[in-house]
Length: 155
Image 1 (tube, rainbow, N blue to C red):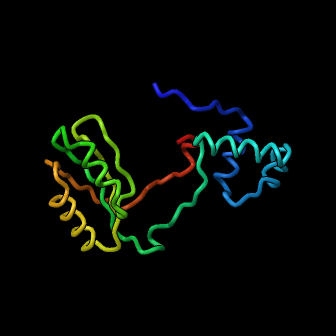
Image 2 (tube, rainbow, N blue to C red; image 1 turned 60 degrees about the vertical axis):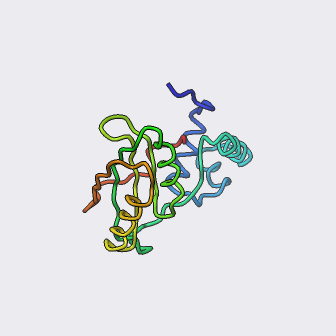
Image 3 (cartoon, one colour; image 1 turned 30 degrees about the vertical axis):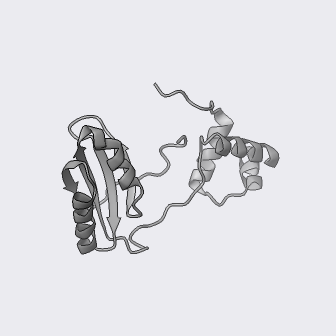
């Protein structure tokens, strides 16, 4: 079981919920909505950020910025090369996620590109260029039904 770095209370969760809805909301505005002092919001956020319990960022609409093709890679590797393969994938600018997994595949990665032709070139580059990969299955999403960014506060 993963031990939490900090314990979140109702106020922490309320602050995170408001910022998940509107990340541009000021500390003053958050305080006003929750009926707490702006300084309290500032201190809570500082603690959450310093402990890495939360991150503040932005979400990009991938289609709007020209990313039209993507693939989920299901990967098997030589056992001694697993972490090396994961590290090489994680360094790629076109790779948005790499995770070691349990089950039939040892690793999952998510790759994005501006076109399907570019995506095919990237997949070939990964398959040929990264030592230790024994098998890659590719799943190309053809439509999204749901992609929620508000599900997890703690990272």
